[in-house]
Image 1 (cartoon, one colour):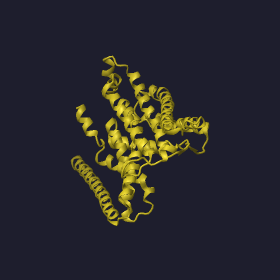
Image 2 (image 1 turned 45 degrees about the vertical axis):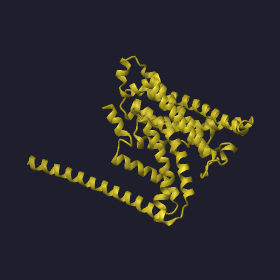
Image 3 (image 1 turned 90 degrees about the vertical axis):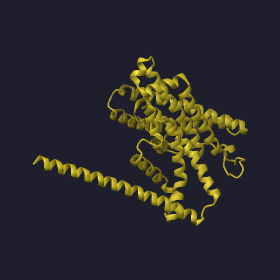
Image 4 (image 1 turned 180 degrees about the vertical axis):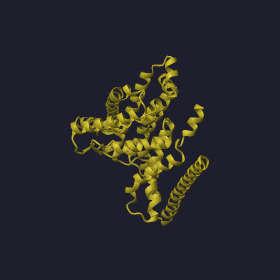
Length: 364
């Protein structure tokens, strides 16, 4: 009686596995058909000019650069602690608030719009202040909510991270209310940059250039500096790194500080694209940045950069390119659907992310 029953169980398991594989392949085929058919119909309609597509690509690059900066915090913390810091989006939000109050002060003293040099200097000051505030908050969270749970099961720090996220968000709500704030206008950033054949504002140029500068600086820090070497060693094996004389606690704190500083600067850059914000403005950008980190390969710094840029372009161009030709109304309102569909596809068919395989091979 046991042998037929075992054979029946194996048959059911095999049938279930085949059914799941068939469903996944059908899902993939449907997505590919929608993307290909929608793209062909949209381009064939001639509804959008070349300049319109360039504008969408520029907007996607600017937004993706911000996502990449935030995603670096997620991927660095995961790489060293193997946990998802869901409070990181609220650390980013703290940077937006810090940058706003700094901008208001600079505007009152007349520096914010005191010519190109004054505006650039003001943005640099805003990024520094936002980075410091975000770093302080992240270090408090690390010390209070994460360090005591470092050896606990993975689910426990995850729950603690969600709780820390709510604590930060509602603390800002208590201090600053539920109303919306808006950054003072920087006149220079609203002007068109003198770039041939492209209509682009200085705000987009600033965001992309600054984000790439921050990302390049981080990459050099991790790959060339002594602390960067320690971060990579702790990421590989904390116990072995400690035996080699590396201060694991200091390395982890540095990782949190660097990721938070980048998130704070990203908050200032994000506000140049979307100047209106409130206490919960870190939620969706934080989730999108986490999506970008997963797309690129969680724990992989170049992957987070690539994932952020990829997600920004998909979110900007995808709704119009894929859905407009199919007659879907209000395509731009479906950008979140496009973004998270990409995440589902990656998790289903390539769960290690775009660059995850290379990391695995290197470590092997």
